[in-house]
Length: 435
Image 1: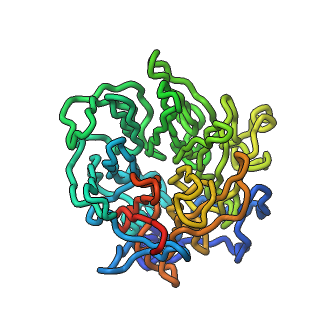
Image 2: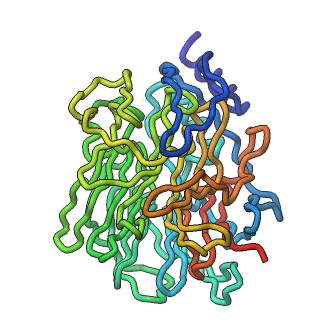
Image 3: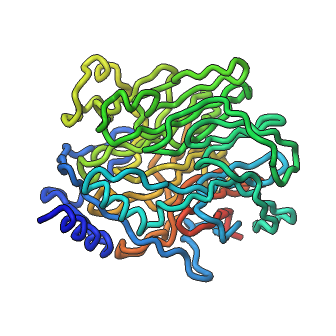
């Protein structure tokens, strides 16, 4: 068959919402969750791995996600365009980064299939490249004020506000803008403080240190497993530390394929992150994970995963494999865990201290996973119990349609709610205790 014929076949399969290729030995597997997950042996899927993603449909009028017992959910702000990340300002205004993946070069049949699939899932297109301000002045749980706070950005994602400065994580770097409490729009030009390579995993999450002197920036890999050589991955698959006093940037931790959400755990003061692991080895292999992050730590990518399990598809570096740290808590294979925030006990009724995680949902597996907002309880600074659902119902039972996809999550301005970005539903959801 000609290449054009193969492309046509790919489009037909992707358009039908089918699995493009499924490894014949794959089958139902127990989810790889927890501190000691049972990870199935790798089953490399070849140059065109399993490709399955539901068609983006959005929410019908009056339809919402399903809240866990004892909780309720409402639309805090509908009608956005691909909201990805949320930041709450000290005056209780809520900032939302609206951005979208931009299709890159197509170099293979798999690239073609992947871009076609992402388009159907509303995950690629023209990026709005803006930050929107939402204000709920009357405290009824619905934002009645909406303003374009900052436009003309380059795939913005992470945000941090310190004093009279707002920091924005564009895909190509960290930019600082002047900010005054209560501002509803920024028109002043920004100052670039650090530059990062765009492309590949494009999100740049930001987290300020507790003393306000540093920013931590998540920078994902360019490719799945260093497919274009490790020189192209220089400075990527890492969390960077930006010293705001000196302007110096250094790699804080590496070997993290796509570290997105970051959060501080208050008991130990440790930095934690959620990481999207590599594709093409099976439905549950390897699991995405939640982990504490050590200064100078190496976490395996691309040479190995979890407990130093070697990825035979990659030219090896035995010394780096020997130094690889095992993550703390597995979150299931290909759940695309992106959002992360620390949730103090009492924020939601019946929920202790822990981490809330927005699972964007899988594409590289025969049975879809993720598509939830979940919670991992903590005790004494460590995960201490099974994963609990907060919001579900984002995926149709037949897995052909997604009504929404969870991304960023944060504690709401009132301290008694969670706000979660849904980039397919184009809405910010608010979760509180049921009356």
